[in-house]
Image (cartoon, rainbow, N blue to C red; front, side, top):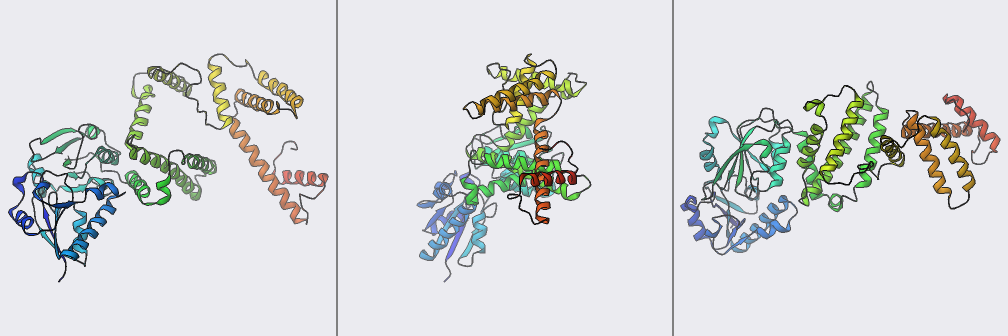
Amino acid sequence: MTPRVVVVGLGPGDPGLVTAAATAEIARVQVRFVRTVRHPTAGLVPSATSFDGLYERSATFDEVYAGIVEALVAAARDHGEVLYAVPGSPLVLEDAVDRLRRDPRVATAIVPAVSFLDLAWRAIGVDPVTAGVRLVDGHRFEVDAAGERGPLLVAQVHDRDVLSRVKLAHEDAAGDEPVAILHHLGLPDERVIHTTWSEIDRTIEPDHLTAIWIPRLAAPVAGEMARLHSLARTLRERCPWDREQTHGSLVRYLVEEAYELVDALHALDPDDPATVDALVGELGDVLYQVEFHSVLGEEAGLFTVADVARTVHDKLVRRHPHVFGGADAATAGDVEVAWERIKRDERRDRGEAPSPFAGVAGAAPALSFAEKLQQRASSRGFDWRSTDGPLDAIADELAELRRAAGTSDAGDELGDVLFSAVNAARHLGIDPEAALRRAANRFRDRVERTIALAEARGLDTAAVAQEALDALWREAKADLRGGGTDG
């Protein structure tokens, strides 16, 4: 005889809504399981084994549902028949029940039950068929609701993280769209809270008896950004490499991806689709780093990707009073001055000690770091009055470096030479990073061309005389039309 699992529903929470058929099966089947005891009517199933421990041990819900099925199949084989009680209805958002029904190892009997849906329609006063309501699992909202405007009833929003993910999925929300939070329907502490889209993750501490009613959205729920966030969470849960990463271990990848993005920006040719595709790919890689760090923040309960998006949005609005307020800024220079002033005011409001160098990233590349320090010092009067000063300083520092060659001071003196070169570049209106990168690229191209010329003549650049190498170098420069002096 095929082992049998009898599945009953415990209703939405009110004991009076548990059906007589469910009560009869609970009394008849002696080996009993409940999905969770964290439900108001779970006590109606005496001597039952719960799967709450499985929830705590498992990394993903998929592992939980698979574990429930395996445990129920094993018990049914041992005892012939077992009972499995679930909150609400067995036919609404019960993944393990769906898996049981498809499992050929057991026969599954479903005892229908009242679900939270009946109470939801009563609470919001709609006929779901007439209104065309779609039921969506909060854990899959970003994917399943993509392209939808509503009406939507969102279930399984059992914590603030899920609420934040739902909110983030609607990228085009104005924030004032009306929504209702349905909490503990049918219980003495039932609450129907009418709020707005921007407040859905700040209004209440949700639990497994919380749902969201969305009558209509002005624009469809966006899909791509939310799908990416969902993917980042899945990889974190299921990929061994992703599971090992920390904020610290990811730093090198963020820096590498940023540099690869810079290369793609420099290579961009609007008339060449391949370079456009390359740029899109590199932008995506950097965006994924933001997603990855946000997932780590969510796990630790520190912040969500919604917090990241909201923070940068609000900061940009705050720092553009000429766009969103009454301030005036006629030129880009006016904007930069106002930007720095607002940043200083923000640091003051946070109680930070005043410093002209506050906010300068110490981890920035050395050229950028030096340039930013010089810019900040210049705003306080610490600067040369003309380009002659920094150009003369380079000559002075080179002389000091020559005198220090071979001593322990050589490193410091070389640093002074480079710092003076950055100062000169700033006064000449030259980006020192870009200038050095161009020089490095010219050097790379000339070395490659010199090697190619030598190999075409059967020569080894590492073995030829210096005079011959110099001649090849000059020829390579001429071929590449590099110009300039030898070096």
